[in-house]
Image 1 (cartoon, protein in one colour):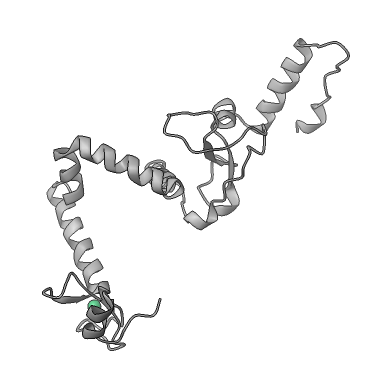
Image 2 (cartoon, protein in one colour):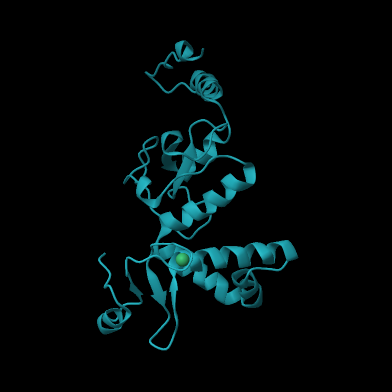
Length: 202
Ligand SMILES: [Zn+2]
């Protein structure tokens, strides 16, 4: 998007950003934003910096962030807002949850919404994939790590159904093959022979 060079032009176009190309007092060459005609303009980089410092200061003091405080004060509304956001952009919502989890368990996370392409069907079971509000819906897509010791990175995740993720748990490929081999030997429909998977086990 091309932003106008002056604030006046931005106001004329109904925009809240403009770009002068000149550095701010702190030397950022960045967009300027303003809340409305009567508001002061701020360099967006300076704004980010100030917000971060404020957040950090709050954290040090043990204060809740403004959004945390708001959520604590308005639990019903917060829940509703969460649902709306989730419905509007389920992938973004999912990634936010995963990002948090990655931080908690201390693994890398670098997935962007555009990295996550949800197939129509689960690549393992062939069942349709669709987002739903029901927790643990077997047909909901699930972002699964291939190697559980590694993080949520483009080369270490696959999209499968919740059903597959639940069945797999934290089993290794070797364990999965052993389970499949064991049960395929117990259940013998007429005219069916259990596939020999033993070669697959290292
Ligand atoms: Zn600045």
